[in-house]
Length: 479
View (spheres, rainbow, N blue to C red):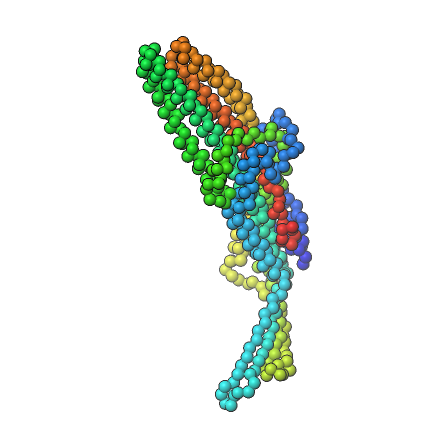
């Protein structure tokens, strides 16, 4: 029975509910296979894509973080992809899966065992040459009903799933590092804003003291200025602590001890500005662009193959065995008498209390669960893309409004400061204007970070960060 026939036999064993979803036509053990019918009505286009511009042609989804034009961000993402310890664990699991595949495929081949012995008589005048014997035992099971073939098929799909899991973890790690660096850039920007605001408030406090000493204002202005300055000063340690925590988290993702990342992010840098919102490919393309969906699909095929393994136990098993060896003899005439035998055994399960049929039903239930998990992975991917599109469009809209708000707040603060110095307005007006300016500056920095983060989320949701470098060849090795 060839590999294709074995695989078809495995998928015929899948419950009728799965067969209706296209699993009966799944492919061969080592060749291309059809994508099972997802049974989910995918939309023709993304609902949030209306009005999107055309994608810039220079963006490489596999290394989309380069499009943010932040050298430190690029360095840290690529360091994490090279040294992250979660990735190292996932790579080890992939190696385990590869060896499990080799073990499963070994079932197609006969098993040979060699034996040898020596005996020396020590009583009744013993003392002659030792008596030796050699032997070779061979056994082989014919894969009549696909048990071995389906086991190898399931191991193959488990290996694929492990490879896709490694790819998906790379995608996730790249997004985590990029998002953390963007957060660090935003925190650094807000820290710079707080320090700049503190410098201005120091000047305001000095002006209020001078005017109070001159008898032009009461001490209320001085106390209000002190309060405002103290609140701003109190926010700086919190921002510094948050920035340090983010840098330390990036260090862990990059597989290194804290320190270097903090120094790398200490250099002044703007919040990354992502490319413009891009026109996106059809939602159906996400089935091939997301490694997590591909991995869930591989798990589904593996579950179908295991149904075939369980069902094969209900049918006869044919095993062949052979032995060849020598009788006890001296070293010089060891091979004078060589004997051998061959036997065939056909076994059929008669009664086991329902254990095997229960195992079949259990495998079918596992296949149903794998189908549900696969469908959920598709829905989750669609949700992530739609949410990221909405987040990106919202961030773009917020930025234009917040830029105008910042311009107005800056002008208002300048006017309030000059009028207060001239005695044309009270200190409360100045406090309000500068509070609005601080809020506007922080809001703009936050919106810029949200826009960059939305770009990362959207590109990730579309499968960005996956280059397919862990693609598996038909013989179970990476090309």
